[in-house]
Image (cartoon, rainbow, N blue to C red):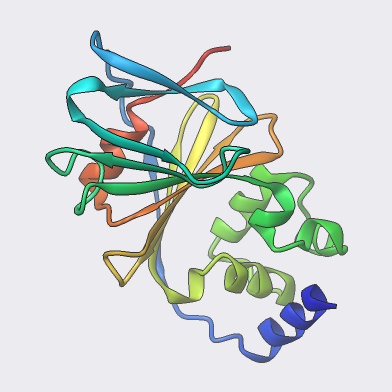
Length: 199
């Protein structure tokens, strides 16, 4: 019932704003000889290499690895040095659109094509507008896609510097890595250059 109420709310409250849509290449992977390799829960073929000299604190907020808090030094990956990694399944990412016939309306088959569809500025169907509302795009100033070989990243750039979202979408997975924090483009480039696909 809550999910359908959300859909109704989204349809009534759609306020689609024009936002900048950009595509950029994935930053070059950085080599690190003194890093801690952190695997991502539910996505064990992805590794995040964290420089030991920059790591200050790690706090697991959930036993499943959803909501892992990291604190760095010297604003390594965020303006306030704080970032939260969350691993979201497809339903949590899309707000349940994949379970209620909206994938067919969006003409997508999986989470990767879902992100690419809402990334396409030419789409204007109600289903796309609902998807954009759920993903927070109506409150964003830009939507930036970083194209990789084994995963893509999508930055929902908020006007609020302290409320940025970055989604890492690995190929052939139904889970998404969500990063939230006060990061700018320089931080995102640093973060993305630290992700490695082991397979």
